[in-house]
Structure formats: structure tokens, C-alpha cells
Amino acid sequence: MNEDRSRNDRSVRTLPDTEGLRDHWYDRVLTRLGLKSRDSIRNDLEDALAETVEDADFSPQERAMLKNVLGFHRVRVDDAMVPRADIVAVAADTTLGDLLNLFRTAGHSRLPVYGETLDDPKGMVHIRDFLDFIAMSADASATKAGGNVKASLPSLGQIDLSMTLATANILRPVLFVPRSMPAIDLLVRMQATRTHMALVIDEYGGTDGLVSIEDLVEMVVGDIEDEHDDATALMIVPGPDDTFIADARASLDEVKEILGVDLTDEDSAEDIDTLGGFIVTLAGRVPSRNELIMGPGDLEFEVLDADPRRVKRLRIHRRNVVPLSEGDSHSPPESAAAE
Image 1 (cartoon, one colour):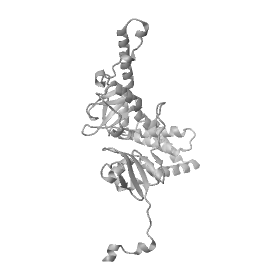
Image 2 (cartoon, helix red, strand yellow; image 1 turned 180 degrees about the vertical axis):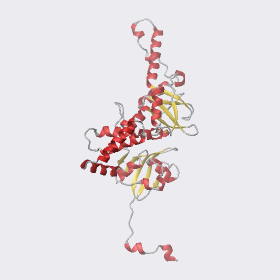
Image 3 (cartoon, one colour; image 1 turned 60 degrees about the vertical axis):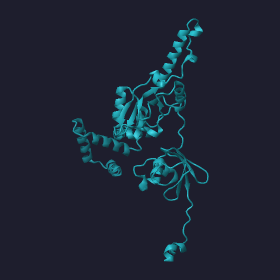
Image 4 (tube, helix red, strand yellow; image 1 turned 135 degrees about the horizontal axis):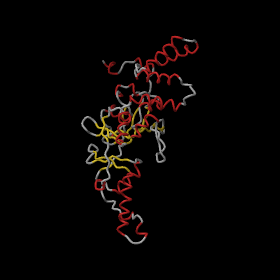
């Protein structure tokens, strides 16, 4: 559709078209009177961005952001959420010492807190609240010591790191949203409630995923990395002997781009986005470590790492398919010849 429009527009630029001018004037009048639908205005803007590829008024980054803003109303929570298997969470009975170590390695400033399982969420803990509690406890210990100036300094050695997170009483509430909720509605709700984390729940009330306000903003502006984020690791890397080491979270589009094999055409890839999901669907179960799964064409998948719930890492092999000779192709199978 955009190609047809662009061809028509090129002809309009070379030859004056009074009818096109009248249509443009008519559209402006309808817009001023509020008689033109929002969808038509949105479509006009999207078409204009698609057609003005070489327009110097917008850089490629600006054009990409504008397209993302116009398409943000179509994004659902499901598109932005972190799946349950990748959630870094902490139990409510975790000690403050263990929580300190987890904050060091997790790379997140907020962590969801659960009771028995992740389906029993209690809230979230913010690293700022955690540090504030540590500082207040240290100040309280120094005050009890009293006396000289040295004793009035915070005494970190007097902090009881064996205290549990639930006892510290530093939890904050989280939002609970369905995966079908429009992302823009969740963004507005997060701004209104000043709560930057939401747990995605399924129809049975279980935890399905997690969304932060950063995840939603990244749907518009792209990936946001701060000083503590590691460089983005490749999901599929070449290995020895024409093999590939792949993260099971790699998308099927990445597999197509790197291996040149389109797995989305397979019947088992329907409604599947990741390589791990494709392998589980292909095997009909979660395969175990070191198991080999025969794939379509000449592909073979070796499971390098997995747990009872999901596949984590894979090695992709290409089988040596020996083509049949011309004489063999015409010879009947042994079972048929025996008959």
C-alpha cells in the first residue's frame, strides 16, 4: 500500500494536481472541525514518515522514534514484559546479607519479593530503601554508643544482616496487570501511582511476567543502557566445526538472519517467538541436558543447559546430508523390491 502511495506521490510532484490540492485543503478543514477520525490522521502521519525516507528534516533516529510513538497504541503489555523464567526475584524470608549480595549481582535497582513462590507476590524492594534502612540502622548503633566523635559515625559493623527482608519492613507495593493491557494505559497508570514495576498475571492469578517503566519507554526510544549495564551479548555466536552456540531466548528472526534458515515456516513454530520455545514444541516436552533434537532440514540441536522448566543454551549442528546418486534415486526401496 505504501509503495502505491509513494508512486502516486512522485507523479504528483512532477505534475501539478489541483484535485490533490483540493483534497488536502478539504482534509485540513475536516481536521479543524474535528470531523476527521484520529485513525486517518495517524495513518497519514505514518505514511508521511514512510514516504519521506530521504527527508533531511528528520534523522533516522527521529523517524524511528516517531514511528514507535505512532504505533505505541498497538503495543500490549505482553510485547514489553520480561517472561517469568527471566525474573530476578527475592523471597520475603531472605536475610539482608543475602539481599545485599543479590543486589550486587542482579544489576537491578528494584526486585520483586514473593512468599512461598513467585505466584505469591508480596511487593518489591528498592535498593534506595534498602540502603536507607542500612544507614538508619548504622546511625542508631552509633547513637547508642554515644560519647566521642568516632562513636557518632555510622557503625556498619553493628548492623544485623541476619534480619529477614520481611522483618525490615521496607517493601513497596507493585501493580498487577493482565498481559493484554495496552502498554500506554500501563504507562499512564505507573505515572499516576508513582509505581515503576508491574507484575503480569495470568487468568488464574499466577505470575506470568514483569514490566518496568523502563521496558515501556524502551518500546519508543530503543534500548536504554546505563553505566552498569554490560555490553549486549550476541544471542547466537559461531562455534567450531560449522556449529553455533545459541541462547534459547534468541528469536527465530535472529536464527534466520545468522543461519539463513526460516524456522517460522514450520508448523511447530506457530505462535512461537524464541528458539527455546521452538525446541520445546518440536520435542513435545522440555528436553534434558545433552539431548539431541532433530530439526528441520539439515539442522540438529544439542541441549547444553536446561532445567525442568525451560531450555537455556543450545548448540546448533548441520547434519551431513549425503545426496542420493542418480541410480539410487530410481531404484525401488528394499522392502518394495522384496515384494
